[in-house]
Image (cartoon, rainbow, N blue to C red; front, side, top):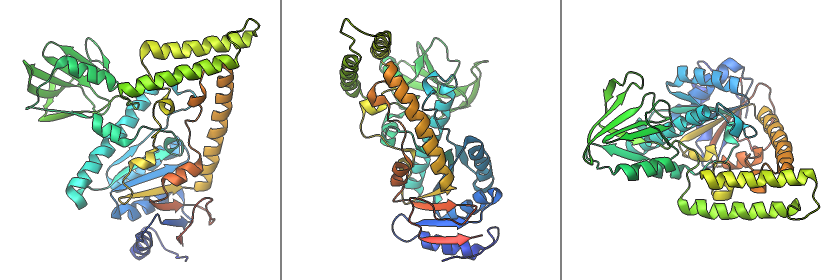
Length: 395
């Protein structure tokens, strides 16, 4: 069915589209003829029947512009940045990107809880990202929810246990808090600067009991606001148990030994390349053993990885795909560059085989959203590959 309408004021067309999407199952609607300035306007009108809208576009610049537009129409919109899967570990902005991603995940969890509690009063939360942002593998959302520490006036705190827990959550212990991702404990004073906050929080204890909780300015140390309670959100995207880390280390060592055999590392006659590759692998595993940092081995540690799309409640979420054929091109280019990079790194001993599968294909991404309601926006009238279209409109 094709319906022609003006997106700015034709509410009947929007109502008809929502009626088609509301049928059981992961329905897909296509609106063709959309120019850039209309896309967020149209999708925002459709999304008013939902609590979450996830917008997926092709590149960062377009995602940021769409996020600004969504904030104008919907009130609250967040940009979720993608990690550079090839150069992320060497990227000096890595912590900043991690902070932005964690802030989005924290807000998503808050909204999920608000919707569960208030039903129809949760409002609409919009998250805008790129195809690369939904293609990397993450720990299940449940791990974040279970890791959050809540502190209020009734809490009693063992500072050493708290310090150990916060290190496991990705925080760095320092003498004085100056930057996000840090915490300090000085006697009965606990300072925490989470990635999800704009200012650090100070918790003052009377023995083991909480005496006060307040936000403060890191430079002047002056109080900004008193808090009744505080939720400490993880400072890492890699939340593993000690048992998982130990089992993962055994797997990493086994992989290392297998790769060393491939490089004939134990034999007398070896090429210079084989020697260097073996040394690189030993250094890679040695760094893990020394630092206890397993962030490069997500797929080795856990098998129940998830995609960002799976973080969203199925029934309450509208997924908006901006030019799916362009998304396909971007995904294929990223996979090609990533595959070539991993092939070279594997041969040089910079990675292990289990580290070479960090990016999802478009088919995997489409599978993640098969039960969701999907709105596809295109300029030209074409049938998007990989989608069964249930309803079509043309602007």
